[in-house]
Image (cartoon, rainbow, N blue to C red; front, side, top):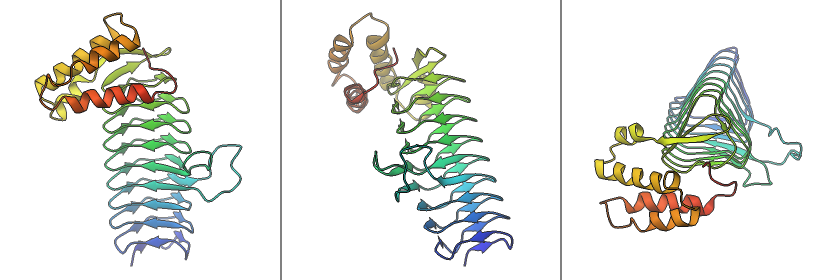
Length: 262
């Protein structure tokens, strides 16, 4: 059976795997499912329906599966789904989804989520991300894999941040941030691409050079967005393994609904 501190309250309708640990004064509600090896710190509150995967570390005073902070929410059975091996630090708040979207707030795997981070309703957070202290993601925000969000950054509802992108400290993100790009400030500006992150993730010199070319076409050559897209598409076949990077950027641009940060 799970290891539950004597002062914790676990609803009889919660499902905890045998190797789960629940700390002092934590409250785990009905409809919560927690996978093997996950630890829940002191004073955490987890409301259901919420599903949490394996080997997550959830620090004290975190509130997960909260009702959406959306005035249209009327008690519908929406949910929060968290994957595996995430580290969630103190005082984070993750809301459930709303029926106006897919009904699910979703967190992937292997994320490093620092203190006081807020994930609002219907956020879709990928895997291997880093969210620094006090990052705030509004409703319906989508964040790709390997993204880094700087401390005190606010991300406007419905914005998208592409894979491998990075936002600087205290950024005001009100438009979509394409994959690979580095942005900061208020108003938001693009300041190069995430070259160091790509190196750390094993991108070859040639693939990094390709991303540099795409950045130049999109931001440095004074092209219209359509001309930049044509130039990026013309790079197909020039670098081994690079076509997937080109496709990811072009698909992101095509799916943008709030306009690109430029």
